Amino acid sequence: MDGAGIFWIALVPGIVTTIIFIALRVKKVSVPVLVMKAAASVFFISTACAALAVNSMALSYGLLVIIGLVCGLLGDIWLDLKYVYPQDRDMYLYAGFYSFFTGHLFFLAAIFTHYNWTALTLALSIVPALIGAAATMAMEKPMKLIYGKFKPTCFIYGFILMAVAASSVVAAFVTGETVWIVMSIGGILFLLSDFMLSGTYFGEGKNTPVYVVMNHVLYYAAQFVIASSVLFAE
Image (cartoon, rainbow, N blue to C red; front, side, top):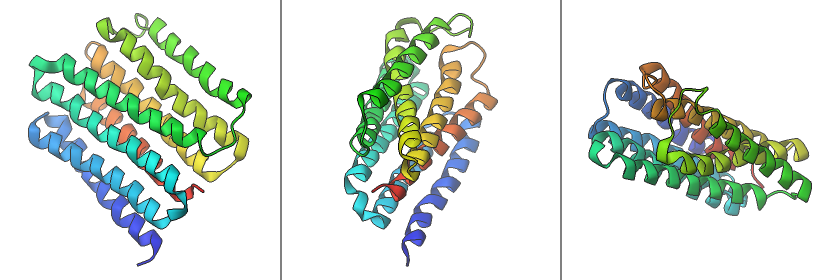
């Protein structure tokens, strides 16, 4: 079997599993649905592993991305456990946020250790992320959100999330390399997904099927695209 075949064997079942999970998630959150979500998340990790098997020259980049995706899997589990065990909602929500935060740190490490960044490109990656995170907090009332005690965590997480998107876009613009173009698409999809998620978690009347579907479609698209970036790394 050629390399492309190995990659598609991981990707296609992952897409199918994700579709099944989203269909079930719209109806009800339960332990079986959580298991299906974890299965879908395992597939974006296996997609990255398959991509690394195809492109074994990208070992360091691939391992950093894979660790970041594993953190995403853990975050997926924590966040949905808050629905299964509502009495421990806050604990699982914090665990989910910081699992994803850690995952994004690994994505940032993958970016900054694999292109020749400068002080300017670093500033262009960090400053817009800080401004964006601050603006998101300032727009809490206009967007009809209530962050409450999670506001500091949301700011920290929002900053690192936006930093990944900004850093990959800057790297793509500076180098023109396919790996950063793909990573930037994944980063932007992730950002859009979490905008939807903030409405679901902190807005009133937004935990609707439309929000749930859009959030998960964007999220899984982001993770599979980020996993696929390993194919193009050097």
